Image 1 (cartoon, rainbow, N blue to C red):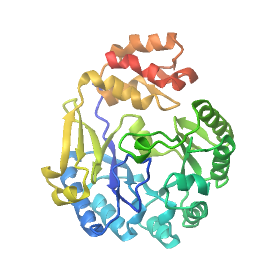
Image 2 (cartoon, rainbow, N blue to C red):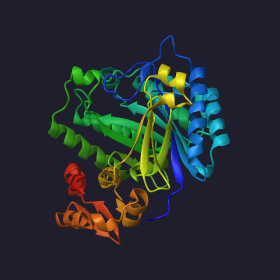
Image 3 (cartoon, rainbow, N blue to C red):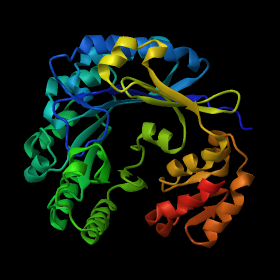
Length: 382
């Protein structure tokens, strides 16, 4: 068995937002009268203290503060949590610390304060630069605020900025989808995430579906947008495009089946253990219940050990999203399994031209990426 990889990531969940978007299926809650920022910060620190003993001898390589809308919180509150992280955990010198921000909560002084406390990467949830589409998506910001937020982030000194966009929006045309991408690229931030709008269960859009573009038009949107992006940014994951040195280290860790812990309401974690097993743990979703019990077993919503039979599929479901694919060495290190056991499946997928191989590494062909479910299916039966 390969030695345990001692690096890991930390996800911090801030569950509140100004308004719940009708397409959002994340654990997010509208900010109401019972919102208590300091009480939640205290809960996060207790949660972190409870997790810390499991991480002895390991090094934290990235932090992602997501939500909800983390930029609702003050820089002082985020700083309290980050100081606790530095006190409790072994931090890499080049750690990447990302904060999700929404244009509707963007303030120049706040962005500067976030930069001052050590946040070195922002992910801005623009979704569209079209006011009509933003209204249909239920966003609290308009196009002017979206543009202003990006400029403020750059003026605050952030050199690592991701712009989040969506396509396939209600009543969106091909030219409108392309215009969003062109406007995002004009800021030359070095990273763009481009997602297709999907109707997820437990959302208002799923219960009351809007009028979405037909499948052929959505495919045309994706192809056209990728054509616009290609001269400037390299696609390195299904929905992620970046300039050299601008790839999200935190998300790369997820996609490479790396370890991570999660603190906050509904936050998930995954850790490889010295005995060769891989465990998952998640926290209770409701902020009030989580905050009441944080730091004790009462905050844990559940935990389990991933069955060995499921590990090949779990690994591939992440790693094959990457353009670069994976090496057999990484598979062995992260799954703790012998690559020889999946070799017949890999050869079968190469023969079907769904995978291609070079020097012990495997990645999807264009066909394998376009039909990723078909590529992944054989690993369910290992």
